[in-house]
Image 1: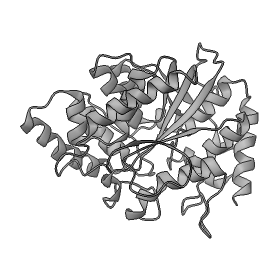
Image 2 (image 1 turned 90 degrees about the vertical axis):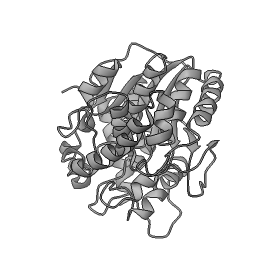
Image 3 (image 1 turned 30 degrees about the vertical axis):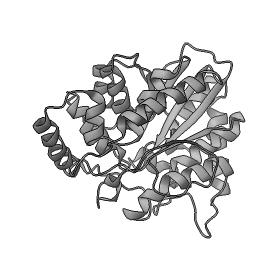
Image 4 (image 1 turned 60 degrees about the horizontal axis):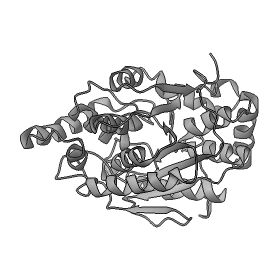
Length: 336
């Protein structure tokens, strides 16, 4: 299998990598997400990932960017790629609960709510409009944008949005055993509210059952005039579906092979139904001699913090698979 599924027909002169940081109370539902030390602490993951990617280290004593099983978090992979290509990424905050300790573009908004209990993103339209402005601004600074996300619990809200828009989608998970039944139950309760309200407008759907990342990504796609890649798994497919429903050009989506080939999800089928070209990166983590990285191939983590897009960007800029893998191994060694 090739390192990149297909070569993108685009040679950027001024590329940029950006990451949308967002929170949703869905991640605090026990069993839904594997991010963070506990469901409550999952809300800390976006600020911590931003700190690691921007500063190259975490300030908390004894804090390491690894899961309890020793699996390196995807922020380490993204950091390794930013250091390899010499890029300073942009952090974009939308609906964040905790303090962000690094420079960032503040879109604003409140933390996403539980889609079963009231509107999850009541300011979705405002977030979309601000995303459009951010996209217009970014059009002046780069000709290609790789836009990732860091939002624990986001595959569940993505499921709600995709189903509400009419897609028979199944979503991935950072857990080895995808909690499919729990996600389906949450989606069924959320979709009952959508059906009862007779809502069909895509931004109103996001307002009812989505998360803050989705309208911001959709807005950036509307305002940005360069080549855009949405970097992420099924969460970015939800953004792509909203973009299509709004009548706008659907960007390409890039992820890892671990999401692309996830048998518990329908990434390929859903991407095709939406009409977006999907790329994937296969870093062959099971061949690198690191047990923690090997867990990606076993279904843990799979993707996050735009890691697949960051590796894709490095490849697009001419770095070889060996250089990319070596950079990742060196960074992981530095963090024990």
